[in-house]
Image (cartoon, rainbow, N blue to C red):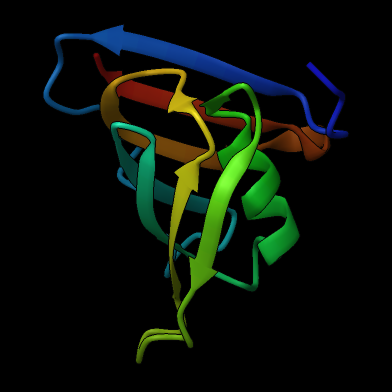
Length: 116
């Protein structure tokens, strides 16, 4: 896999309905979440914490191979969050699940995934 400049840790927990830090993108700009099903990802992020380029890099890392087939974002919602949808060119690394992305100390990014 090509280095994206991020240390990405994926914690995959099978069979759980959810995991949570209690964070959300409005109160914590360095956090966002998305859902994936059959290579299609839908979510929202805070532009105060992530750039569109960073979001695209993190999303494509969930594809196999790490290539997006499409990416679209909406204008900011009333709460300032930007909605997006993306599709992997071939398939997702996981069939379906919920993903939580958070920036932590040292510029690292942690991705927690719950699904199958």
